[in-house]
Image (cartoon, rainbow, N blue to C red; front, side, top):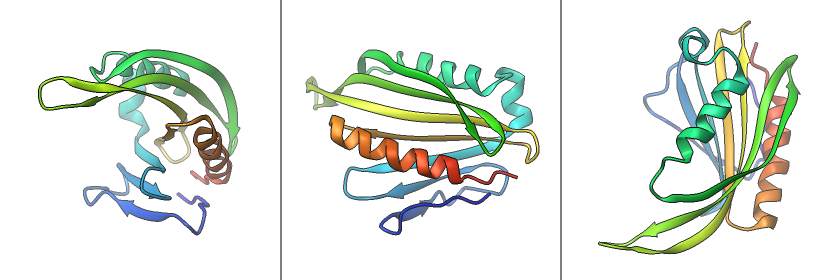
Length: 154
């Protein structure tokens, strides 16, 4: 796998990552980060025959997270990445910050995600980033789009 990313990013590889499965976080500042995960396609395809099905299930599971409220899909699209059809979702939701016994309040957040299945490498890839403001979200989408377009999965 090969991917281009901005020089300003600090990389954090999950120490449990292997060639077959893992994740890396690209940190840009205290709050801004983009995650890239990968795993064995054969296992994923037992549950998700397409990248779109995998992406849709991710959205469905996010709706059931206690801290996430009012999740809306803002945009859903198909992208072409390295000869593959990838599923793109932009979502917006309220997230509660947790207190000791009660929720402290809500803040808006937007997430951009790309799901991709690569039969040639036998892997699936998931990239996502989120922001707390529209400007931050757009900046992350620009970075995520560039990184996604540069991904060489096989």
